[in-house]
Length: 231
Image (cartoon, rainbow, N blue to C red):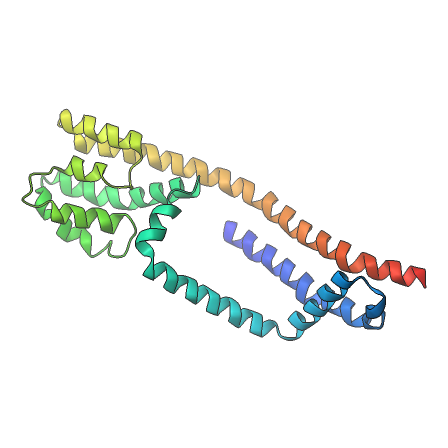
């Protein structure tokens, strides 16, 4: 449903910008010299965009690819900052926990030693932010005497309150139960926040599309109408 809303909103916006407004621009071309400079600039821009929309798509693709390359080259710097973004960072962190903790709990339930946990998990989570870093630290901790709780508490995958719960679980020899409780609580939080985000998405998209159309109406259509009325 959220994907449908985004696609629908972008489709409506694209139709207005590339279909409706360029036709208005062409029909009012003879008034160009009588319009305000900024309106003429917008009209010319829309006319160019309507004719060469495919170049705009290529440019967006190239920018997206360059952004992907930038992220890959600066992944260690960018990723922690993404997880600090309010709401989005929490959602991403809880989603990763919901993916990583179940197989970890299965291995702990089977009494597999900490030194042997990394192997079965490393391949499925290769390239996954935070999780890959956590597994690398677990791998480095082999033979160092560091426990699972200590390594987990160093990871940004867990919030400060969750890290405290992990330490309490380790002291009580109940780390498996504590991780299970953290997982259950975060799944409930994730579902609640996603429902809230989806409920806010629809009005936000409607308002955004409406504002864009309103701005172009005020800056393009109304000046054209006012010039026509004056003559």
